[in-house]
Image 1 (cartoon, rainbow, N blue to C red):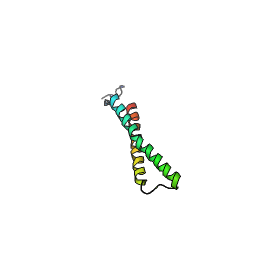
Image 2: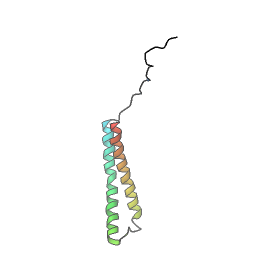
Image 3: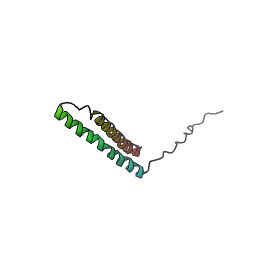
Image 4: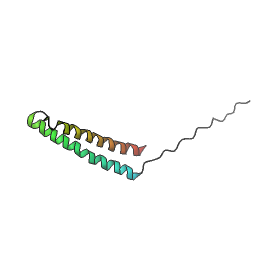
Length: 86
């Protein structure tokens, strides 16, 4: 038995599937659409704080829901952009 000078074979690299450009564009468009409730929540929450010094209890859940939806839009845009690079 002799030691050979050839390196051991490298394992095959699994092929990566890239997302289509159409899906990336749709994700970005829906992300931008989901940003609109977040902007409205910031607007109405800011007006409420400016007028009364605090967010009114009747619109606080709506402001929170709008911010959550807006954060979802940011996450969707981020996933569309980051997923396309990889």
